[in-house]
Length: 112
Image (cartoon, rainbow, N blue to C red; front, side, top):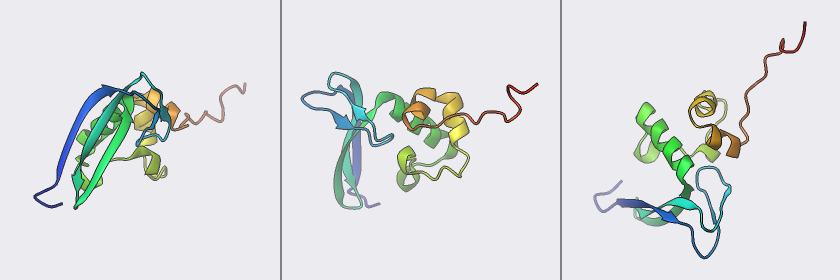
């Protein structure tokens, strides 16, 4: 990260066309609220759109784990063998559903 890097973000209403959420990979429909960000990191400019729920989940996860900057969580690219899916199911079920994360059913459930 260089001294010239910057990041700016705000909540918008998606207009003109749908966008792909950088967190879950699902579509953000026209007219839906979205978090829009733009900036420069390591000399590269970027823009991104994220569902507001996905942004809240990623920010909460980053706060909880101190994973900011290069370590910021991008859920659709994270290794599911690392224990973050249970946290997401418990605290951000809408985002977990978008990522097709489901609770593992107890093997004994339903057996008498």
